Image (cartoon, rainbow, N blue to C red; front, side, top):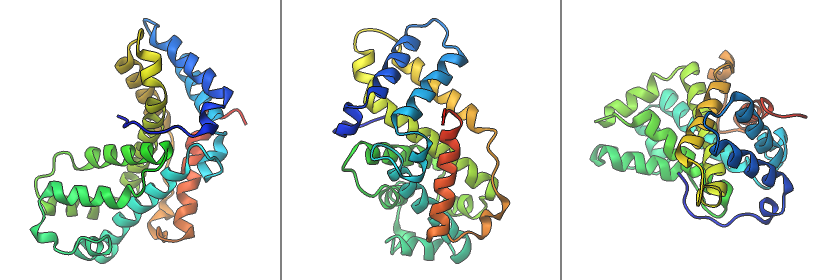
Length: 241
């Protein structure tokens, strides 16, 4: 997780980040981290990023980069299913697909999806996209396998991928902000963040995909709206608004 990145002043000066930092610090020193503690951590996170409205891109701190990366990725998957693997690959700048190795292809796809790296939000979203592609393509050994995975992904699978991405996005953002300062002298960083990650993913299991998503134009405003709504729905799990 995480690569060094400057922190937006709105993050540094937001008192809600202090609440989140303290909650993570206390949890890291606990023998067992309770669900109440984990829920509190995520509630502080949502407050700190500006509430569930961050899901619609209304925060300068978090949310906007996640929307753009998720849209690029799911648009590509849709293009593979509608126009074929080769044509979808050409549309993102991969001209000679047959001569690429599996790793080269994945790197091209990551570069396309993870566009920009100018602030913490973008860094976290790029790291989350990297995690998602590893999650999906970790065991593939051929370009045909990559094609088959994307061709065969139904609405439920695509929904699971988006939820995995947004869970990773939250964790990448939190890890970048807090891991060094909180865990420099005390606390178990790896265990704490893994428990938070597990809790976040468990919390998303109850979200159901809309079967009408198979007809969405992911390149347009309709696709952006669907992604914003999902990110907002995720943040609302812990929102007090």
